[in-house]
Length: 165
Image (cartoon, rainbow, N blue to C red; front, side):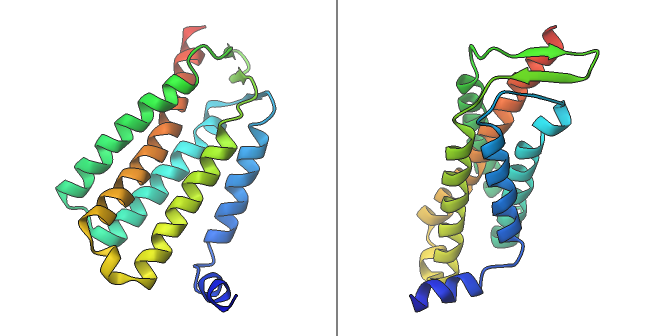
């Protein structure tokens, strides 16, 4: 129990409101909704900023890190677009919104992404030798890119549907 309290008390303050925001977005996705492109861009933007900020803080912006992240991002974008393939998306361009049905993948993806990134950050902080291992670095960079990419791929699919009508 002390270990959990220690981890939570050493967690940056901004992690808790970020978690609440992400969970609220995931719960909202469980219902069909009409949303603007700006609203639909929130999750990809958050995951991109969070991913790039975390990677730059831990590894800097060296070309190998960025190339690995971009490759994972492209892979994730393909997954995100595939998730929405065949989804009944309908734009109302005069009102500036897109109708999207309930998406039951958003909340689990958010939870998996958040807890993966949180676990990796805690591991790196509590076991610096593990955090320096190449396999750890590749996993952290890859997961960051994949999750950001999934939400970008979904957004690209939303954008395609919006522009098609």
